Every structure is written in C-alpha cells, then in structure tokens.
Amino acid sequence: MVAVRTRARFGPSTTGGGIVIPIALPLLADDEADAAREVVLSGWVSQGPQVAAFEREFAALVGAPHACAVANCTTALQLALAALGIGTGDEVITVSHSFIATANVIRHQGATPVFVDIDLETYNLDCARLAEAITERTRAIIAVHQMGMPCDMAALIAVARRHGIAVIEDAACAAGSQIRMNGEWEPIGKPHGDIACFSFHPRKVITTGEGGMLTTADAELDRKFRLLRQHGMSVPDVVRHGSSQVIFEEYLVSGYNYRMTDMQAAIGRKQLERLPELVARRRRLASRYNEVLGNIEGLRLPFEPAWARSNWQSYCVRLPDWTNQRSVMQNLLDQGIATRRGIMCSHREPPYAQETRRHDLRQSELAQDRSILLPIYAQMSEENQVLIAEALKKELQV
Image 1 (cartoon, rainbow, N blue to C red):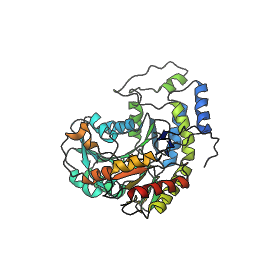
Image 2 (cartoon, one colour):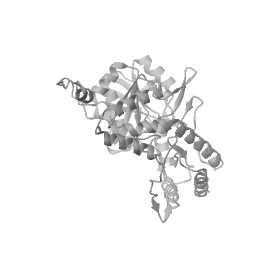
Image 3 (cartoon, rainbow, N blue to C red):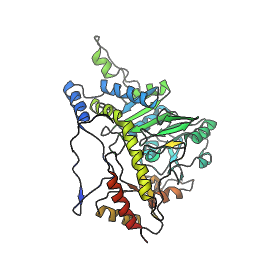
Image 4 (spheres, rainbow, N blue to C red):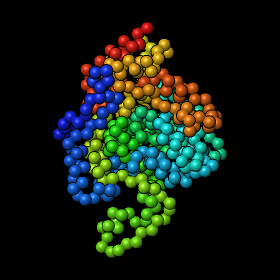
C-alpha cells in the first residue's frame, strides 16, 4: 500500500454502551487531506485540472479509452441512458435487486424498467432469464455488478448483441473487481458493454465523498457525457478561462449540472493509488471470513465464480430458514456489531409497487429477506472477524 500518514478520524458510534464495529469505514488519511488542501489554496475548486487528471488515471487503471467524472453514480447512469437516446416508450431490462437508483434513472428518462430475477449464488442478474424479457421496445440492459461481484458479462453480452441492445454496467460497487473474458483477466470498467458507471460513495472501496465515473470505448458517447454533464455548454469553462481570447459559449442541448469538483478529484487520485492494496486486503478478509464462518450450520456464504474476482465491497451471508433477519441484526447491534439487511428490491418500494410485473422475482425477494451484510473494510482486524463469527454462531444456534 502507498505510504500513509494517518491519524484516527473516526469517532466510534456506540449503542448500549458498546463500541460498534461499523459496516464499512473508508480509508482516508493525511494524504487525501493534503491533496484537498492544495486544491483549496489553488483557488480553482470546481471542475478543472484535477478532474481531468483523475479521469486520465482512472481510464488507464481500468483500460478504458475514455473516462468522464460526474457528481455521483446515479448521474452517471442517467447520462449513460441519455447519451444512448433512451426515453419515453423504451424499455430497459435490469434487476429489482439493487439500490433504487438503478430503477429510478430509467424512470427519470421516461422509460420503463423491466425487472428480471437474480441468480441466488451471485446475487446478479440471471442471464438464463434474459431473453424472455426482451421485447420490440427493449433498448438497453443495465447489468449490476452487485456488491462488487461481477455479473456474467460474457453470457449477457452474447444475448444483447444478438438482439442489438445496448449494455450499461452498473459498476457502482465494482472498482477494482476483475472478470475473465476471452481467457484474460480484465478490470471491470474496461468496459465490456457499451458504458460502465462507478460510484465513489463512502461505502465503496475508494471514495471521494460523493462522485461517479463513466467509462466507454466510444468517443462519441464520451463527447455526449461531457456535454450533458455541464448544461450542454459548447466550451468547457476551464478552456474559456484559460484562453487569451474572448470566447462566447453556446448551450447546444438541455443538459445538467452533474460535475465533479477538483477537491473530490484530488482525493480520488490518492484513493486510486491505494486501490490495488485495498482490494488485496479485502480479498484476504473475505477469505478469512470463509474460514471462520464455514462451520456455522445453515449459513450460506457468498460464492465467487471461477471467472470472477470480486473486490468484496460487501460480504453477504444468507441466514438459515429458522432465523429472523431483524432479530439477528438487532442482537448483533446490541453487541456492538453493525450489519445491513440484504440488498433491497425496488419492486417492493412504493414508486414501483404498482408497476406490472412480467417476471417472477422470488429469488430477489428471498435474497433481501434472508441475507445480511457483515462488516468489511481494509482496516478491519482478523480479531474482529473472529468476534463477529462467534457472535453470529451464537445467534444461529438452534
């Protein structure tokens, strides 16, 4: 890992008098603080040279020809749909089993989300169910790399290409994950579909506080992202301010203010330097969890296919049928251990509850109702993992 000067900046939360082991904890230290300070003192704090450098470095890291930084992953997903021309009357296939932003951006474009069930082993879209969801109105598929575990892109892309459908990767959780394609290990974000979208929220492996990124191999799509993220402005402000000639910009399309700031990008550049070691550490932690949790009767551990290398943004276990999810989580919290329930299902939320369901989503519902996410973060000790395993084992004893 890159050398770090760090001081404790996390004030432990408490419940019932005990220190909570948090569900996640970003690794932010003096290097990030110093980088942000330099930007503040430079006088240029909005989108500028740091954003451009962050884009270049992220593109190089994942092997993408183009990378465009934006305010967050939700805006990245919306720009992806907008750049593809998806709107009213169109359908976009995705999973309900994802953070609600995945469905919301489809709705915000005036299109209709069509939910397909998941593979309960990987918690990702079940590609065997994909073809039956395609209609003459289908314009795109949003494949979610849930909790950092790569979706089966080879199978998904094969179906999409047969039908001439665009593929967007919701890679919000997947920075640092890899997938084996055509016999080679490749980073998520290369991209393997048409566009990949990332998040830098504090729950992710690397963070800029908020922030997002789009990657693509298509120069025209990248041009559209950059135009749309800044109100449709014909000349970026960094060009205008740096010119020795007066420039009058135009606003060519109705765009958005979806920009990333230079302060965020400066932090992101330091986080990128840490990414390989952060992922390596998380993979070691996941392996250790597999060891200490493997003998708990009825507990289903996460599955990593042979063609996937997860960054283990989350570690999700499925509880035995005889347990109560909320009770287990509350009892762990009473002992100072934070957890989260299984990934939400958008079709169960009020905005989508009345939407016509064409497909069975029982696996998605089962994953939400029977799974919990355990704490995992780079600074986590193996002693805390053992403590968590012992507490969970006690809770699940019949």
